[in-house]
Image 1: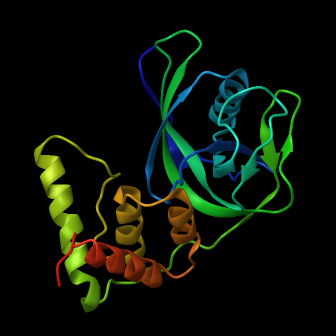
Image 2: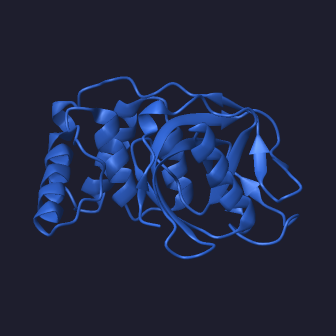
Amino acid sequence: MAATDTGTARDAAPADPLPLFPLRTVLFPGARLALRVFEARYLDLVSECLRTQRPFGVVCLKSGAEAGRQGRSVELEQVGTLAHIEQVDSETSGILHIRCRGGQRFRLAGDPEQRANGLWVCRSTPMAADAARAPGPAVQRTVDALAQAIASLSAQGVHPFIEPSRLDDAGWVANRWCELLPVSLSAKQKLMELDDPVIRLSLVDGFLRDKKIVLE
């Protein structure tokens, strides 16, 4: 079967409890996420999300494995991001390639539980979306550097971010840089959790200047 668009504009509210997909990655709101799904529990999860037009939750693994037998010990971060399925490709039997879009952040409300099929679920509470804040003059070089990176990649036929670009939005600029930065998962997690997008962008700006990626 060829790739199929799912029409995420009709997405319903998240399920309660929220099905979780633990990964060794930090998903930021507005980010693109591609997954290769082959375990039965996650194939069932994708099928249910497609049927109900509901997202699932992506949480970063602090310890443990992404895949494997039920009952294996894992430790999850407490804040994750909803993943809305945008495209599904099932050309290979028993394997799905899905493309998702990062949505609203959430906080786990209690201890995750593992169902009989191995799927992790947990009650969750939504976190507020970033307030629309313009980047200040102090971080303009960081904004310009991102615009240049996007233009350079686009010229090579590479489009890493979901369009349209929102270079006038501090949270969007910070999140896109966070996807690119070569920093630890724990650092990305802390940045993703920050409530103030201006502070997040300021921290990113400081890192880029320290590493001479952005010059004074």
